[in-house]
Amino acid sequence: MMLSDSEEEVLFNLSNGKQYIALQDLQGVGKGRRAHTEQDRDASTLSVFANLFKCYTGAGILGLPFAFKYSGVLAGILCLIFVSVMCTMAMVCLVKCKNALSQHSNSNLSYSDVVLILLGRKLSIVLDITVIAFQFGAVIIYFVFVSENMTPYFTKLSAAQARWCWMLFISPLYVGLSWLRSMKYIGIISFFAEVSIIGGLVTSSTVGIIQISRGVIPGLAFDVDIYPPWRTLALMFGMAAFAFEGAGVVIPTESSMKKPQHFNKVLVFVLTCATFMYISFGVLMYSAFGPETGKETGQITENIEQFADHMTDKTFWHLVQILIRFSLVFGIGMSVSVQLIVVIDIIEKELFKPGRLSVDNMYWKQNIIRAIITLIGLSLAATGLSFGHMISLTGAFSGTLIQFIFPVACYLKCFSEELSTPARVGLWFMGICGAVFGMFATYVTLVEIFK
Image (cartoon, rainbow, N blue to C red; front, side, top):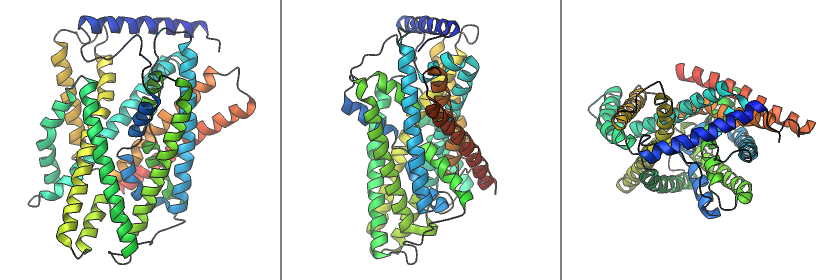
């Protein structure tokens, strides 16, 4: 790959800029920043697999049973496979671009760096805004999930009052978590959150199997659509795009791997496992609860409560239902820190550039900024947004840009002289599909939200 003069200049300035940031960190000026001139390749293949798998096991999977209600079984499975294949190819393209550019740089490059070098500063800014929109959308989705599962316990208040009371109650916790600087502590929280989510998913799946085998709630098991109206498939595309979004993790994970030549195999294996898990959980829960899946909000926990009401041993199954609910609430709720830190990093990087906010009392200024961002997210979640529709909207609007359009555009620019005609046509097809399906899914989801 040959670099133009302008691209080489950007790489040189970028490398020097990263060295300057690292020097600031050593001097204590850039407190909270995590820029490094080099990143040791000390991660084993197993740890890379674990990190990637953790990235693809989040709130997105909880919305998939609701998505299957809109897409139907066959179309939903095909849509998930299609998005999975596109996502895998796009991430491989992105890593190849990073590796090609890294040969001309003495520092590790991020996703934003790759876009800056290949597509220019304006599109790099667009990417940063899109990442903020996606990550902040994920934060709101997580807050909505926690709120919708806890407000039913405020029995003496209306739904709106309960949401605001709950958000006020938990706001000190989340503001405090937003002040964490060390990824060590955030990583520990993330680990326990992931264990909690997996435990909730396994127990929920057990409930689904019992409902299918015994028909505890009469008339729901296997009352499913195979070919629903094609228009409703757009919601599934948006949710799939959200569930498979991992572009922000792929590059740093590959850069940390001891044997980077094995990264593509690990990535393909992780996404294959994730696809199988998404399809299995989505189809299982949709087959169990049919047209009632997710009710109106997209929350599968509502169906589990409905299941407990129909069991003969109501006390035991209500305890199971509460266990599932709190397990998922803890897991999703504690995952907010991981999503929020990305938003905070980008915003703080821009605010504390030379000529903007002074670095005097930077620690407390950062705390105020982080508190404001967190409180905005809590306030938006308290307005009564739908969990399922928010997932679809975030995935359709931001997810398609991050994981389909930008990687394809970077690859076309980076390897423009080496691509064969079939490869070029395939990349254009992937980019156009992502753009068209993303715009259509955004439109349909907005119509559903405001209906």
